[in-house]
Length: 74
Length: 245
Image 1 (tube, chains in turn orange, cyan):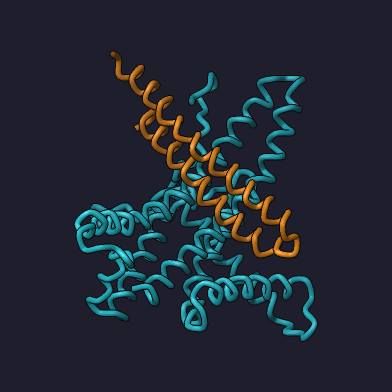
Image 2: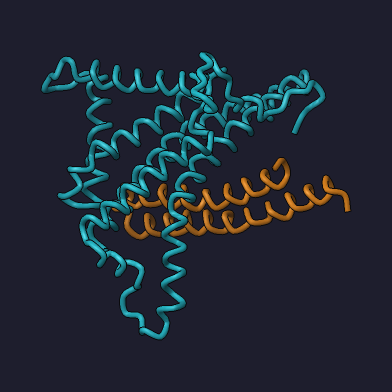
């Protein structure tokens, strides 16, 4: 198989990992909505932790993207 | 990713030397990245000095913003570390403002984002990691190895768990640096790619234009968020070094 073709296939496979981040972000915000629904007064504190959780989960998607870019252009 | 005109969306990250300086074999030129770092430094200093010049009891807008920045980081330290956190305010505040201004300056058109280079973010992350490890050793001596033993685990599982704990500890600077670097790289590359579509679509170019506007708004949020995440993770690592060891 040609190197260029293998690179493109590898990059495509690597990006499948972003799926986990999609599930994770959905889970985080589902928990946030549930928490605020049960206790609207806690919105401020919970929002801060939600943002932290969102950034950490998003990072996983970006790790997958970085690996894909390294495969494609490295 | 190169398009027909030969311009790649990754070209915006190229480092160009402005004042070439060579020390023997080393290239220590003053580059566009260094220039933007100096600009960020000057902006932070101006923001804080000019903001606090009046020192009114009822703050005006600029002083308010300077005080909010201070309080934000101070609260962060107090919430994660407790009262001992005050000692680490300078380093955490410096890291937070440097990353924040670095991210924000990159959003100015035709500017340069120095936090989108892995070497810059890795330098910050490895500095934090080495500092935190030295802090842990200085505080606890060799008993700091107890950190790698999760509590309430039978001795039989130690040979399995301790290497895993050590590896996850060593991966901290990598995750810290790659998180910031990848966020900035992906955001700016996406902006560039969609900006290319605006011109290519001719009349219907206002659709990708709207998307670029929305994406720029998201990039502002991400700039703040990534600076906040970097700062809070630094605080959490300091807390681990001080307490859970």
